[in-house]
Image (cartoon, rainbow, N blue to C red; front, side, top):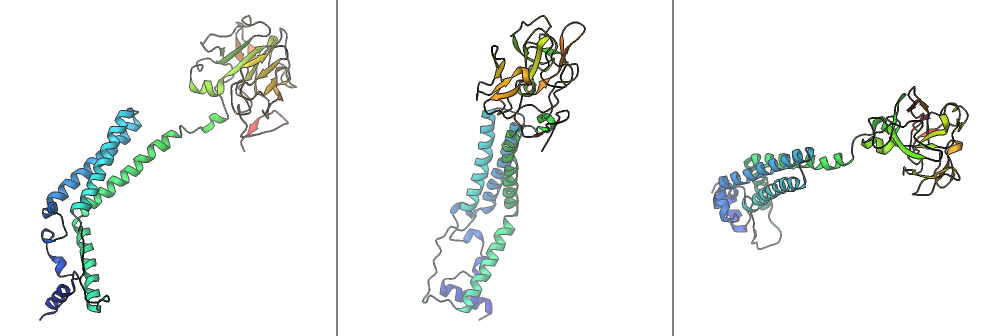
Amino acid sequence: MSDSEEDHASGDRLGTPTAVTLRASQADDPHMRDAARYPRRVELIVALFFIAGIAGVCAFGAAYVENAGTQVYGATLFIGLFCLGFGLTAWGKYLMPQGPFVEERHSLASGEQAREALAAALVERTGIVVKRRKVLGGLLVTGMGIFGIVAAFPLIRSLGPRPRSSLFVTNWKKGSLLVSQTGRPVHRTDMQVGGILTVFPKGKQSTPTAQAVDQTVLIRVQSTELVTMKGRGDWAPDGYVAYSKVCTHLGCPVGLYEQEFELLVCPCHQSMFNVRDGAFPVFGPAPRPLPQLPIYFDSTGFLRARAPYNQPVGPGFWERTTEGNGKASAT
């Protein structure tokens, strides 16, 4: 008896699959389902589902980038995941042995020859599966890889645009015309003492940035020149004074003005700022004064910005210097 015949006989006697028995065609494998009697046909179906899944995942990514809508998101994501899942399930169900595998033996310990034969069979079967399923394996890896990339789109996009320098600067520039929310310029005769108005730089009043950081509260404290701090002698002509409307505590809009006490009040956490004293906080959790916008009247009597804010507006994530020109630097 030859060595191969002896191995085969030994394998049959012990009920252990050997390298020889595993060389039989897949169609003759008793552990395979009926649909796997035609493996090429099943492989084609699985490959088609993988391709459809990849297309669905790619379509979901494109739809998300283009803001196609939640219905398109749901449809494309469902197609992609369903097809990938169906293909993977079909692969495992119809192209892999299902069992049960029974090993009949007289003793619990296998002989050295049987163990070597089983190891060889496992290595060979694994090699056969890998070699025969290269296309399906490639499609599965491609589909899952693309899905992993596309799945990161919502996370990346939800973070919003990078703030860049927007945390330090606003749209206020030298010569910016002060306008109301409707775009109407503010003239020196428009407000009486005690009046208050939210203003923006012209052309920016309806932009998200304006609503977030450009919003400025304009108050007419008195009818004569007002000096709020040393070095700001020409910042408040005819008693008009402009402060950032973004609270230095948590960024809430400081929109209330108590004329009797001349205080700007944040309605969220009751921080109060003295408008005559550079908007320094006199009550509440706000740690810093509101930045003041220097303004002037142009030749036609309309209010304009003399310069941009000399420090970042809003909550303080930056370090303010207390001496010199008051400019800020990031920490």
